[in-house]
Length: 250
Image (cartoon, rainbow, N blue to C red; front, side, top):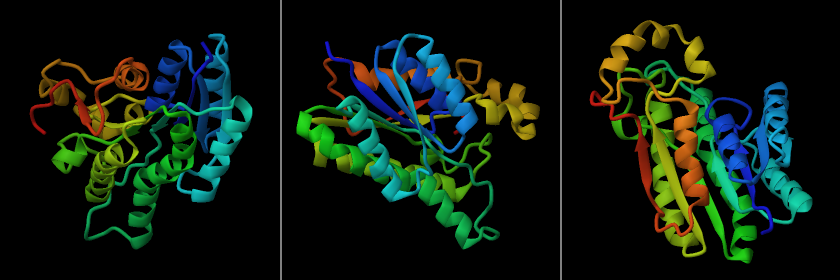
């Protein structure tokens, strides 16, 4: 069978890197999109060591024109795009009384507008082939407004909630050919989380509020993303799926 192709935004590290690995393990060629060139090269090397093709594309995901360029580069290289994982995001810990307009705009642009940018860029190719899977990274904060472990506040929660609305609307608009879902992770230990002194100091307390008694890992989220991207048949679309070990203080 001809190898399927996935684009993973924010694929250099953290959850995006985990998703890239999981998709490669399912045999998909992976195109990584990020601004972190060194980390992206590392992830590409890991995937190619698995015997799976991988490409890297330096891009600010908030750049609409660049998203269409990346989609064109991937189609030119491999002739198809089957899966899009909208993983790129950025935190925003500033509250409503202190946030600057530019901070709000940047939060919306990277977390929400980026999903629009890449979905619009890849949807024509998917519709032409009659097949596509889109998985976007929302957050538990979209439902909770920010749990006790949250390092981001209202702007991040608003952007991530917007992803849920985008997912539901596009599942209707792009179905039946394209399945569109999103994932809402809870407390996940990424490289950035490990460096956050607040999370590190409170981790034992936070874990006590999780039914599975541990924080999540990028691999946990990647397994769900890979299922939504590869399962055949898939009778799931328009859904936001929480993956948080059941964090009961949400």
